[in-house]
Image (cartoon, rainbow, N blue to C red; front, side, top):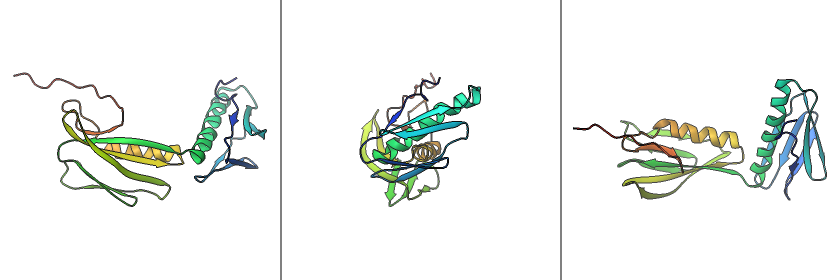
Length: 185
């Protein structure tokens, strides 16, 4: 049996789970999320926990078992605590501006790059520092849906991925970029 799939999801206080047909709805203090459970996976909600079981041992069903459990667990964590991804924008002259759910990046192109975020994803400018002798702005992307938070953080990073020579660009907080030596005379 799947190691991930067989673990029950313990519901924290303040999280309410309801099931209608094959749809699981999770409500918490931060919001509400729903997920459609595949036909090959059964679930039971009892004693403040959700348990998933599979109907067969086919490889595709075994894969769905752990995946379904992980997705519903992410929903429970999302509505109770939320998810946050932080990005660092490093580079001299690089500017970040946030107004509402609109992010404007000036990262060395001839034009600013503008992102308009959906209402369920929040973006904020956390602060600025100096790292590796480069001015650094820190952007925070947060929300209750882990998939959407990760998607929007990736879209921001794709604008200017970190380059290995000077270390400029947009990277996840804590991401290690292997630096290369430049030209030798």
